[in-house]
Length: 138
Image (cartoon, rainbow, N blue to C red; front, top):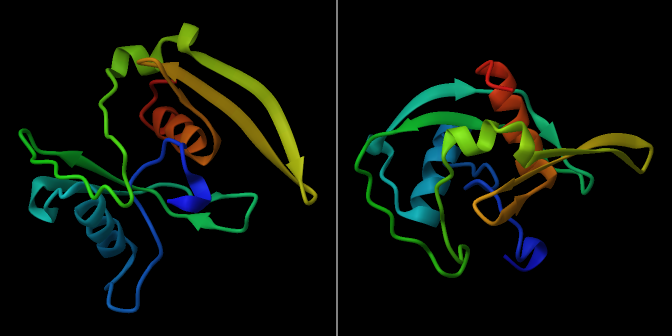
């Protein structure tokens, strides 16, 4: 996407009036972006909202992807998708906390994950960090 080109992110997007709720939005978005069918996901629930400096409020929806799930990316929105081993993600050597950054009077923590040759930062890193905390893996 032009606004966030080059950034690693989870599938997602705006809630549409046809969506029955935020979980339906998440399932629609993962289908649109990665071609994953809603029936291939066991939804576990939502985690804490994440606010972004540009004013978005992200409501992460967590699900378990059934194996094997088929992926067909929409090249207008996604350049590539990749998987990260949970052990690599939870290895303290791959995590850096860069303190906090204040934007428009709001303080945002700045975690980073350096995994699989990728840098995960911003809201994606904050969502990842919160999920690992909830799962008691961080």
